[in-house]
Image 1 (cartoon, rainbow, N blue to C red):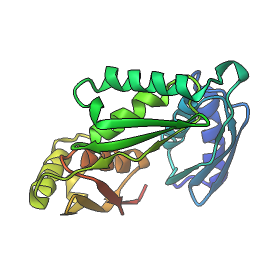
Image 2 (image 1 turned 135 degrees about the vertical axis):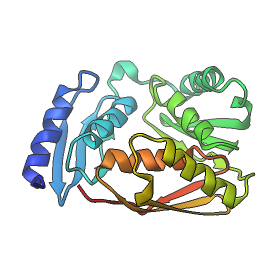
Image 3 (image 1 turned 120 degrees about the vertical axis):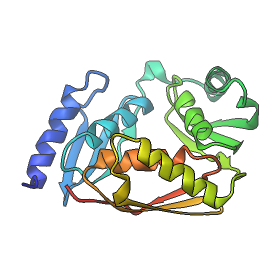
Length: 218
């Protein structure tokens, strides 16, 4: 039996309150046709992502619009040069062999990442590295993926990853690949499964764009 929007709303609110790593006191939850919209304020950029992860775990959720605004407490506000210095150090720590390929620009607490990467995991890891820098209000990840692998090889590697995954029914998902761009089609049973498929696609070498057309059928 499918959950109603009111039931999803209740469960999302409970999940947010249950998470000890976020302050959910100023978060408002709205649900329409299974799509959850988060509005209000959150005291750190890292908590904004944590709230989104909480929502995606709730059964019945088919989409999330994270419109939370980061409002840093005065004690966490810092000058842009200090944020930039710590962001560069975070990149060096998390990506010691490729951090030189990236550039950090900070304006009004927002960190912009620029440069090129061969693998999407490097782009993701760079984003995650700077996300927790004190004073960060948001991250704009402009790192470009430079494809160096043939489309058929990309398609094969993604399909093999699907077959290895215990969380995915590979027979229900179709993969198309062209010039570093991947399209996923088919059906899955949950948002988590859809996210796992997309993550597996991004982990293939040379992938610079994933268009996820997978439909959730609970």
